[in-house]
Image 1: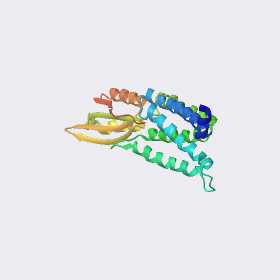
Image 2 (image 1 turned 90 degrees about the vertical axis):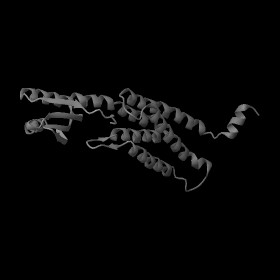
Image 3 (image 1 turned 180 degrees about the vertical axis):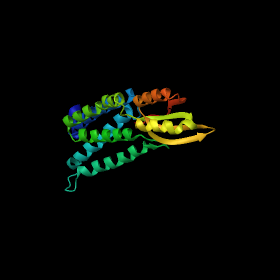
Image 4 (image 1 turned 30 degrees about the horizontal axis):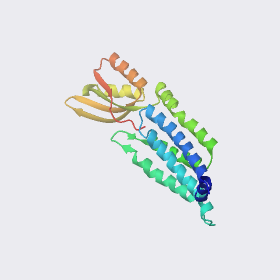
Length: 225
């Protein structure tokens, strides 16, 4: 009995298919994570790889369980449903609520998508998973378009004299800049707001024309989007 006879005696024939699926998921997860890493976002290469490969493995095993344990009750969808539920808890753990902004929603969605990709690969839907990968790769160009057209808001802090508060709020309303909170102390007022780079430029120009002294800076929070 040679090596291959022993190999096929103790290895299920579908295990090589599962290994191929794992390799495919490893590559797809790595590409997804690479896009996150290059944009400086959390849930990078290793996280996406683990999520995609792990869900692929569980899905592939659940599909082939009926080949090992012949049972009329074998239902691959049961384990897949548990994957979706479990990933929901993982995604919920990366969402953070600060006083002025909710962070991590996009990261949680990416984690959920990575698991869905793994389920698709584990089920053998390679073309569908490649199409989904294409959609994921479009996220970064879309984010850049959001920035270009002023559709992506980030938290900023604006410091002014309290006597100019009403005038500044009027200008903010004209530019559709969202106020989050105010803090007043010793004749100075700090306004926490959500705005874009383009709106900030317009606001700075208007404040300069009105001869209103101000300080506008971005809040240094970790970007979980």
